[in-house]
Each structure stands twice: as C-alpha cells, then as structure tokens.
Length: 333
Ligand SMILES: Nc1ncnc2c1ncn2[C@@H]1O[C@H](COP(=O)(O)OP(=O)(O)OP(=O)(O)O)[C@@H](O)[C@H]1O
Ligand SMILES: Nc1nc2c(c(=O)[nH]1)N=C(CO)CN2
Image (cartoon, rainbow, N blue to C red; front, side, top):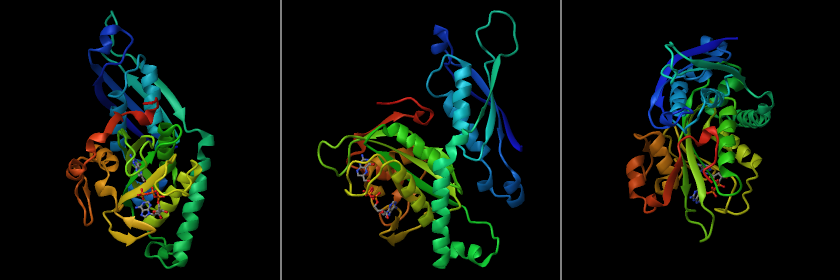
C-alpha cells in the first residue's frame, strides 16, 4: 500500500519512570509511516485527497508535550491513536526514540516501534453518515444546486474544498467520550478531514435555566468537499446517533454540533445561518476557537477578531480550559 513517511519529529518532555525524568525535560524523536491510498491525490493534486503531514507532525508534538507517561511504549500507542484519527490512514508504524535515556553505559539511541491498524469495526457510523451525505447531495443535485450540477450532468470536475469551523458541546452523559467519538465521526464522513482540534473547556450553561449542568465545549477545524447544507445533515446524523433529541430548544443535550463558519460565507437562512448567529456572543465557542486559531476572524455584522470578541463577552471568565490533550483519552470529570 502507498505510504507517507515522516521522520525526526522532535519535542522535549518529561516522560519516564525515574523521579528526575518527571521534572527534567529530555528530547523525544518520532518517526511515523502512514499507510493510505494515495492514487486519488496523485491524480488530482488536491490536499483534500490525502492527509496534511504538517497537521500530523503538530499532532505528534501535541502528544509528546501532553500528559506525562512513564513508558515510550505508551507514548508510541498514544501517537498511533492520534494519527489514526485521520480516517484515510489505514495503518501506521510509529517509532519513538529516547536518545538521552538514562542508561549507564555508552549508547547511541533507544527506541520502540509499534504498528497499529484502523479498527475494521469502526466504519459503521461513518458509512451511515456517508449514505446520508450522498443522499442529501443527490437531493440538492435534483434541486439544481451549483456544486452538484457537475454530478448531475455527468462531468467529472473535482469538488471544491471548503474550510469549516464546527462547535461541539454537551452536558448529558460521558460528554468527553461523546465529543471524542464526534470528532472521529466528523473526520470519518467521506469528504471531511479534521485538521485541528481545540482544547476542551468546561463552561457554565449559557442562556439556560439556573441549575442546568455545566457543558463541555470544543471546536474543530476541517476541510470538506461537502457543501454547507450536506455538512449540516451529516452533523445532525452524528448528533442523532448520540441520542440528541430536538424536543426542547436550548435544553440539556448529549451532543450539539453547530457550523460556526463555512469559508467565511454569510447566509441568512433559518435552516442554516452563516456564520452561526449567536457565535459572536458565546465565550464557549470563541475561547476554544481562539486557542485553535489565534488569528481567526468571525465574519458578518457582529464579526471581528475572535480573540477581541471573546474579550468582550461578559462571561469569558465562566469558561475554564480543562484539557489540551483530551482527544487522546482520560477524563477531566
Ligand atoms: N450555523 C448553524 N449550525 C447548526 N444549525 C443551524 C445553523 N443555522 C441554523 N441552524 C438550524 O438551527 C436548528 C436548531 O439547531 P439546534 O437544535 O442545534 O439549536 P440549539 O443548539 O438548541 O441552539 P443554537 O443554535 O442557539 O446553538 C437546526 O435544525 C438547524 O437547521
Ligand atoms: N455553556 C454552554 N451553554 C450553552 C451551550 C453550550 O454548548 N455550552 N449551547 C447552547 C445551545 O446550543 C446554549 N447554551
């Protein structure tokens, strides 16, 4: 199978079994070989048809700089898991080197190498969403949507690639686990690629009855070949799969997925308003977005630099950044 090989990704951290290793940083160096089908990218020259190795390198550094582990075996496993979040990657070989390990004889390097494959059972929700996405794409083709005309007329133009910011939140059940599953599901939708995942925030319920349990919130940045309506359909399918009901507007919920921004487009349609009409006043959206993209701007009549909008929200002190590495597991509860 085709592969992308990334070598020598390095960062300093305090992983190790010995006491002094918990406080004194030392270098960790990672090589990763990712197996995926590169034929489409080879033909189209389109980044959306492969994985962005720059993003993978950042993910590796995030894991190295994340929570302490004793063993490089564990570090390698966490890195493999973070790489397999990209749904295109079928298999990965990860080597973690610890060249300054405390070994009392002369040595060049010590490393572990592991190989991990995508869970073959993992595709169920993704294929269900894929079916929803293609059903809704053919509906919009029937309605004459510009993006779908090529498919309707049988021409084979490459689909355009869009960039979206999706906000995630919930306050019922094991929300952290639900949000992790949501990221995997969003990335697994055919045409989507999640490129950035914000830190996780605990936030007071905004605009809800007193006593409503706190939320956990985060945002993801993705590229997608879906149009905005089809993306919304896919997100609602994921919400429903996690038990979301829409009976109570602004009620507690296991999972809420909102499109905050889609290519900077503005649109005043109640089915899909862009940017999200209340994003500008929500610290629980702006804080994780500003962490993920410090220079981000919100478009529209209430728009501006996200960091400035955040500073203007009256409740920006009521959101607490609780984890940078939540996507890799563990619990902030
Ligand atoms: N940018 C958007 N993202 C998600 N849904 C949107 C957007 N704009 C309009 N909607 C519409 O809003 C409807 C209600 O969405 P939802 O149930 O997620 O609302 P809510 O989470 O209770 O409130 P809020 O939209 O204030 O977060 C959806 O069915 C959808 O059609
Ligand atoms: N803290 C917080 N408050 C909310 C949230 C949310 O995700 N987090 N979502 C709402 C409606 O979508 C309303 N209020």
